[in-house]
Length: 153
Image (cartoon, rainbow, N blue to C red; front, side, top):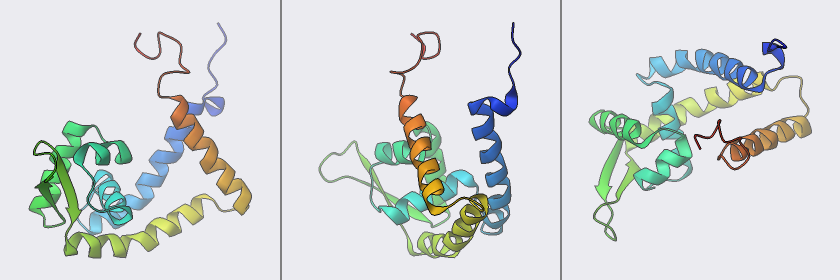
């Protein structure tokens, strides 16, 4: 059997970069009393306020039961609010409160600086291509491109 070269293995490379990015950003997040999941929720809500919980779960890649706990904690902290949708009593919509928007506004420059540092040495075209390729890899992982053993079939 041929050994698996980690430095050439995509899941390892993506995880390694992600772990390092989170480690750097966690310093700013901790100063605000947040973690990376809280940040994803804030960033998603700044981009589009008022999504349903299920849509927010998809957008943030946080499993819905975990997201429900995260949202509950953030609501207790005054960062956001949950309300029942008027059109569907089962659906919950999430909205930023002023405190959540203020914290997100303070963190966005640090998030952009971190991204710029991670992309240092790449041209604008290379950075755009990298992002497009990562979006395509993510889409491929919906299961339709995976062998049966890898997608649970």
